[in-house]
Amino acid sequence: MSETGIVTNEYVNKKITVKDMAYIGLFSVVISVCSWISIPTAIPFTLQTFAIFCAMGILGGKRAFFSVLVYVVLGMIGLPVWQGFTGGLGIILGSTGGYIIGFLLSAILYWIITKFFGDGIVVMIAAMLMGLVVCYAFGTAWFMVVYARDTGEIGVVTALLWCVAPFVIPDIIKMIFAVFITKRVSKYVGI
Image (cartoon, rainbow, N blue to C red; front, side, top):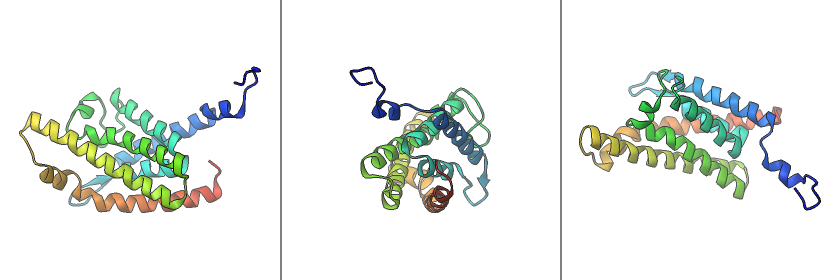
């Protein structure tokens, strides 16, 4: 508000609108549904990261972050929104929980980068790639700590070979499709 008590445009733009909440809820559901879809390969993977990339590209950083936050909170309270229809704190505290928290870090990083550098295609791709690297790094560090606690110590190279290497190419492909869909959707829908 300004000194005169009149609501200024700057103040209004900082609030989350009902429309924003609807998009945030919608994409939280999309992320949940995509986490249930498993692509059967030698090492199966889900479409969870694809949905997160789509949320980032279509909704922008702020709403994408809140979509991922809602998704993570729903899973933490026990709703079966994660891969394999699972949920609960046990999953977060388990060996792969760091990757779920890493999705939040990716969304925050995307939000920060696009806020300062705009949302052009090059910035969008760079922000998604950096977010993916942060997710991998945080998730792998978490995996190593939990694995050491439960089973025994593991080297960084081994952890990366188990937890990151099989997913790099599928995640890059999902990112490419998400950027393509983002550009198509933004032509026809004013989100």
